Length: 247
Length: 247
Image (tube, rainbow over all chains, first blue to last red; front, top):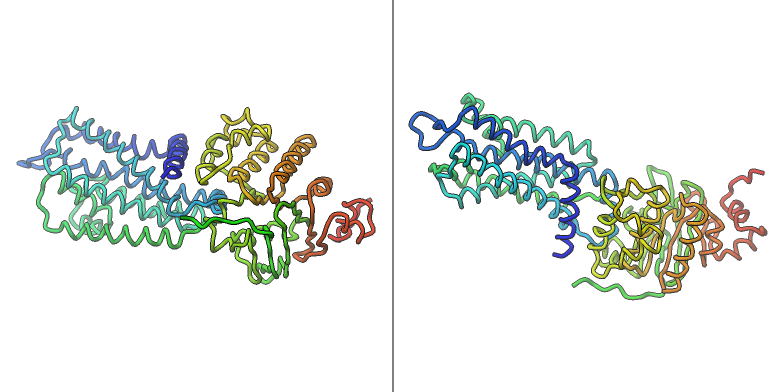
């Protein structure tokens, strides 16, 4: 544990010094929320709805940070360390791949948590955003979305040959998911055919689950998205650890 | 509980170690035996197979034939237990961008159960006043010394130093030699590669000269001189390594 926290401290400092994730995982979600806030104010999500459009969008806003960390930050850092032979140096020390990946994982959990802790008060103070549903269920679905997305990132980072390869894979995952999963473009404004198509992204499932939990909407298919994300997590984490490449 | 590494008579032993790259034999049937508490020098021209030998011994490269034991262990199988007690300085050491000397040392130290005091090591190697600096701001020589410090942080029984003093000025080289002799006096086994024959003559108990991946000479410095009929080690080396002497 001592090793874990010492590593976490240094790696987190380096990560913050780099600024990329501060911008993409903390500032950007807040900016998106503020823009949505100015556009929609405290308008209801649809005529007669029991919650506002902004409340409906909170899950998607939280997912921006998850998406940035899991599909961009994490894979690029790990693949970059491989390319710079930093992993090779770690290889001739007692550290295990699980510890290394665990530390990087924890960093992006922290970013996502900080981002969430920032956007809710902003929404609450200026546009009266509440959490009409169950906070516990929301937190649970947030965690599931976070863990499953980060596990995809770990897999990409764990096995990509170099930073360029990781970057290409990360872009292929990041941009479509960010734009079309409902994280930036609200799911509700998309045409129906498009909604059906993007429902295939795991992040879309996560956002829908978070949304249902936060708004207190009854959904029949809670287990379906949960099972999808759980399977993704187990599969990707397994591949990341088993097939981890030091060089 | 990790398996403890006991003291052995032989710190490093290889038998018929062979490595083939794309059909080219870069290392052929190398048999080495490094006794505990001695300094062993692996010499040879660039591309003679020095780094490949070290990497096959450490398990960061897979040998195609033969065996290598480090402190009585197979480095690939007992990686985590072994590297508690073995320090390594690779030829191309790299580090995280923006990392400070103190952070790199602290991050390395936290990986070990009983690390040496890295501040004292930095003092000893003359970079004690640089620990707040970023690693990239150090001069080549300072960075080289930092990587020797990193290899000594595990408080190792055995240390591998690839191209130990490349990039150091004459005075610093002498200082490094002196420290290494002191460490040898404390029981440390040193496996080094070098291009400087003065250094080898001062430090090494035994040497092996590699020529195109094969041992062209194996024995003490005195034996090398006697066998080649040369008065200076440099001449003996060139004779064995078959490099033309440019008058």
